[in-house]
Length: 138
Image (cartoon, rainbow, N blue to C red; front, side, top):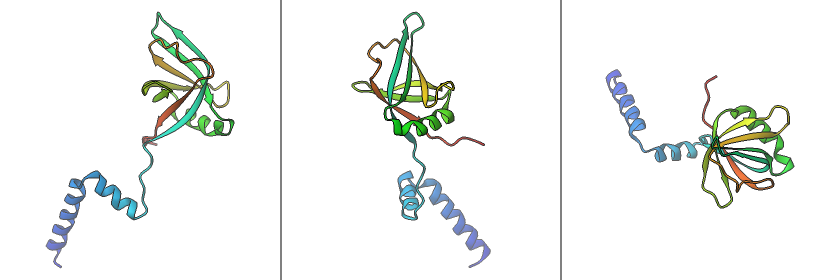
């Protein structure tokens, strides 16, 4: 094959890769044993304290992992994602955005800050916390 032919072949392959549906590329990657990283990680948490400030329109939740065996993983996620936007869902509620912070004074505990006053989220309730696992520049 001539240099011109191999250049044309490379260009065609590149165009196919760019224009192919995402599912086709994912299926190929999965077939070859290369799986994309998960887009998010869910953790079940239990509310320790709930505070609402009507005049500020904010609700704060102090929480920890719902089962003692998950404290180390939650602590690592809190450390990695402190100050970031997350989503959470309590039973009977829709997914809602919030900001998560790590409470450095207490291992495996976090603070969830959300807009609006919500008195239905109380001590002892559980919720699912969703961390978005986007790639971060190093």
